[in-house]
Length: 51
Image (cartoon, rainbow, N blue to C red; front, side, top):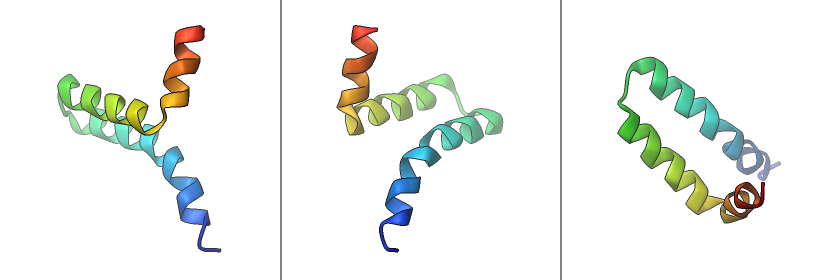
């Protein structure tokens, strides 16, 4: 099914963040990745603000 990779992609974002951390990238890079993730998923940002 052509849609399967699209469904798996959001699951890869936290994994990539962990990999970057283990590789020793600085916190600024991780922050930029996190902010980009929030931009891609604004509903998650709204959920966090309510919590």
